[in-house]
Image (cartoon, rainbow, N blue to C red):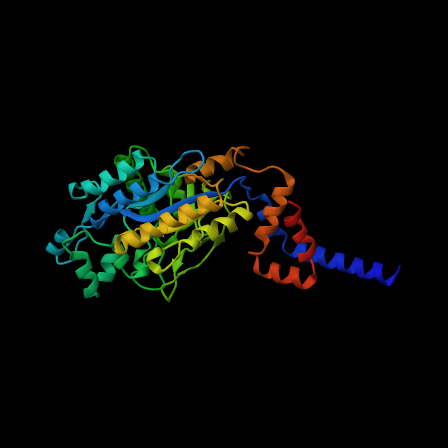
Length: 397
Ligand SMILES: [Zn+2]
């Protein structure tokens, strides 16, 4: 055997070794569905019970989104992660902050907010989904308030509260973060809470919630099991599941990572939302386009996270940035389609050939584009030269 043949055999062995070492993440990204066209979903959390100024913000969003349409004629969609209650400040104040009382979204004080949500739904631009009964776990909030005057003031405020003002750990609904690291909640308390919020959601929107997104992306198997009983079929994730708040108050105890189309133990489809667009924090419209192009190369839908605070704190600039970003996306990617998470889930489940790619070459190209996100694989494939043949997959598509 010549030296050259031996060197080639060694190289192939090295590549095989690298591929084998990363077999699991590589196979998972091969199994992950590949979408045939660019898909853009704007997801906006925290709407519902809260400041009354939301009514005006929602109406302006509806007007803006209606004016932007994909090539099927559909207006730009925005999912609304809905919150169903805030503290009833005057009633809590009357107990000297010893008892929690809720001000529900169904209260007449929120008539204008609910009407703005409903008219956006009827206009085909809003798609509600469950964010939670409240953006906190009430007993944890009350426990934390017992030795925190600032929290007591927040709880007792006369106007419907903005949960954005709470310390971040307390904004997690599915752990007790009254002390850190957080403690898990009892399973039966989670089940009761989910049953209540699913029923309240149905009473408001006329049908049970089917998509859920946990506040601050902290949730557990027990929450997913309760969601399944409440009718939740799809769970919005950032690609990983944090199950606690750690000693520093950060989301921690990550016990799972997921790709779009994978399933929870309780059977829900996971969808990954990993693009952040918060104009009030300085994110430029171009960010939407860049993310859409990158996800499209990966054969993935582009799920964009944004929050109501943008449209309350800096309404003019945030609306303008959103409009500009969506129009840029349509200009550069005229095939882009606006879909709801539930429609995305159904396309995956039914392997709908209108949406899901089955041809080998585009699937290989999307797979190759997904591999760079596996950090050690990226480095090793470059060092070993494996990146060169892999690059051919992308260029041949
Ligand atoms: Zn939230």
